[in-house]
Length: 91
Image (tube, rainbow, N blue to C red; front, side, top):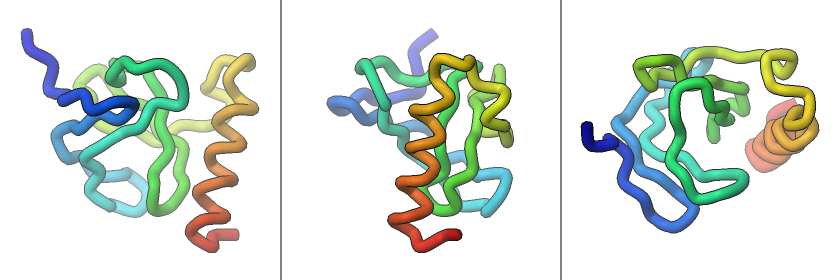
């Protein structure tokens, strides 16, 4: 089966899916490391509301908690959430 993700450098385009927190339609992801498109179980951060999200088995976004993320990756995601909040002026 062909991947629905179109690779563009470190960014991937994806079929639009709504953030479960703010309902913004998201149609792209940027890798924090590596150059692979996301797969079920991977995490991402909403670029609008800074919610931590996980791709489910159907590649839809589900709300996640920092405690869901493997401990060795938590700091990286916490910094990513803080960066989006700072950029967006979210407290």
